[in-house]
Image (cartoon, rainbow, N blue to C red; front, side, top):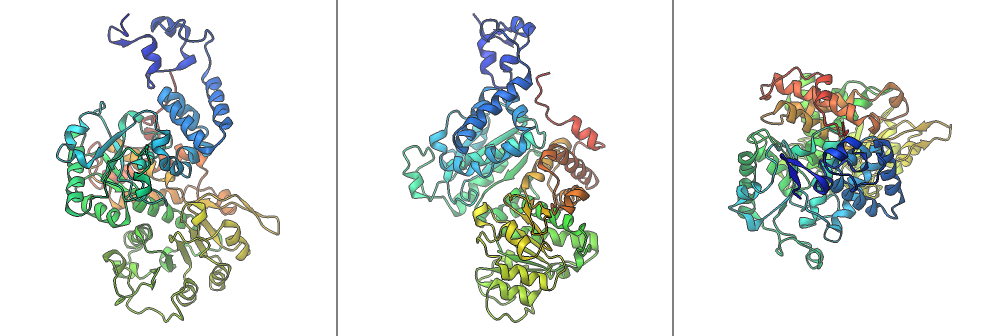
Length: 550
């Protein structure tokens, strides 16, 4: 018997389609209409029962990786149920579908692989990337997350095993930002892998080659960008994810004014960090004028420089400060010491923040830099665990009533300090945020302080939703800045009083709607929206993906 009747998918094929499948929630009438009687247990179940069953199964898994695999299996079986499971349970599920568990999943990608999702485009497809993209069945793609797998989280070069990152990231665009899954596409670019042990894994399925560099690599990325625009749309958002530092900033600068693209590792991190600073400026005892603060970064990679760039953008656009003065508010210390004019072997990006009259440092340590510069804001992007020592934290308190200390390195094992250390060593004076989650801390006086997590998931889903709704030509600096300003104002007074700079992740869909509304309005004012509208928060909410069956 045919699986189709007047163009409608019938019977077992409807149950096997993850977009159409409702499992035991198909009504009695639907079971008759779609010839499902006898193919399902007789009782019609509510969504609540289905969700409770899936949560019980997830929680019964023996390892976090097993939970990840189970959720991916659910996604491939019943897409709407998957999102009905994770959206109300986002605090519990986010660490499973994305960091930190996705890192383990990527390391084991060839071992846990079950069914294709997204697209793999390798150097063997060079010259034919457009034809490869035409193989994807969906035409209306609005958001792409792409990686070349060279710098997967803090795990290094995982080659085409990095595919877990675009998949996981887009699930957050869907579940947190309300971008319809049918409009999203994860892509893994396979340009080789320099991790020999991985390539020797019998289940590694990427090309067996060292990484392609130089002109060949650039031609490949050029072709990919052009092919995406030709195959889908000039307003299809391309989000670069986990490219190596040598390529991340370079590719962003090369393409940002030609294609609708952004780099979450650079711009998303910057938006969330600046949002945290905006939140801190709202707290009692903290100087509320950003222009009066001095920022010291420990680590001078693309993430730190991205944060400094966005701070500069705020000072120039909203404080009336010239660019050079804005840059002088930010200092950097890298593995070779303080960055200053005349220091050898500075990259172009680092040179932007090289000071002409640096203070005398006793040595090249962070403690010496803190004592000499006396920053009010200390930001760690170094991946050096516990580098914010008790003495450094105490020194920050000597010249600040309430120092702002952000330990942004991931994962938790690489954080510059823990929440407990920061709070205890500062006697609760420090305003703290971290890249990884930390539990609330009970102080000796009984006060409970709740550290905020500077999680990029607060921003990038709203950015993607805004670009999708207004069909933006590009992602401008002002759009990223607006995301930071919006998020920075969303933590309630009660949360700020507990030390938390960000709203609850339980509110993430509402947060994304408000950020998307704010960004889309900026795009309209800047002439970047090709589909202008009023973009009220209510309008945005009405256009967010709803996974309910009805």
